[in-house]
Length: 217
Image (cartoon, rainbow, N blue to C red; front, side, top):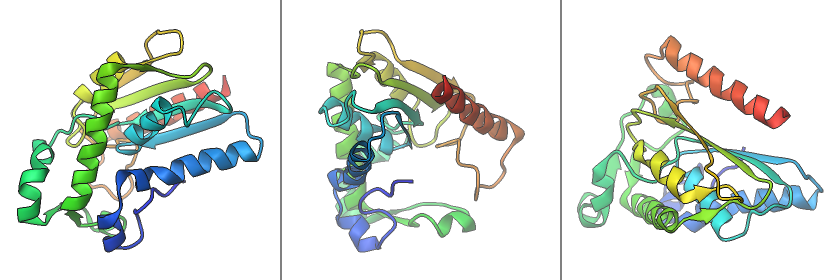
């Protein structure tokens, strides 16, 4: 797994990192695989990793040399929590936002989200939205599939609509988007969550099996 820049280190580094810092390890990993001679590379990303990857595609940093599949789970382009859209106004007054998590999740994510980080997220998704509104195509040979939770509390389902309209295959055709009957954000991550249902487990299994089938075609 690729650890995004500024994540999983210290709270101060998380607070002071930019979205470009978050993106850097993704490109580093891709270039390292190409240097090693890999020609059948697949990426799977979720949430904010998706606009980071789309930005790399749009800017030609991920091309048709080795990359074959990109899978996006619950990409965020439009936030469900509209407070994020005014973080520039309320952020300096609040300093941070407190997030409710399970005990298990507390050991993996920051309980307090610094307003500086939320501003960077807003900058990233604003850029992604504008890029999608203008439209851009995938390089030849790359296949993208999006899996989007319908009732996502973090990434509005409209995110999938914008991606469907703005991101096209190299021949101009639409990319593959599948809407999932889920109320979770990043519904493929179930460990550490409370009140997981059989539907949640079925959704996870379906996506993992689908990704495997696509890669093995």
